[in-house]
Image (cartoon, rainbow, N blue to C red; front, side, top):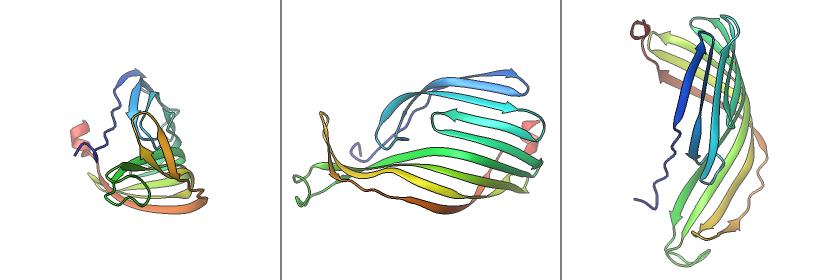
Length: 174
């Protein structure tokens, strides 16, 4: 299980500065850049008024928020994401037999996200924009060094994503 398990950890300490501003800081052990990295994290959320706000999670995301009404929200921004996947091959075509290899990917996406309440606890979202690959490579996994087996040069592509998600009912928040 240890060969296939990847865990991210992001401990944060947050402060509500005033009713319109909150900040948090901490660190992350994460695969956001494709490979495991440790990096500082800073979160800044600011509501300028009842409609406009800013949500920033450095270094991975920044977005502006426009609240159309209590049931409709529009976001625009950029997000960095990544992942790593271990593969153990019992065929020695690319690497030595039983050697672990890893697919590392990371990308940056620029887009617009629309979210709408369907019911008190159920929301619908549609997210669209463009994403640009930063890396999508196949590497050998060795504790002392990483050797690149396949280097991909992927371009920028459009995307669209539909989602349904659950949120706490409003009566729980009162």
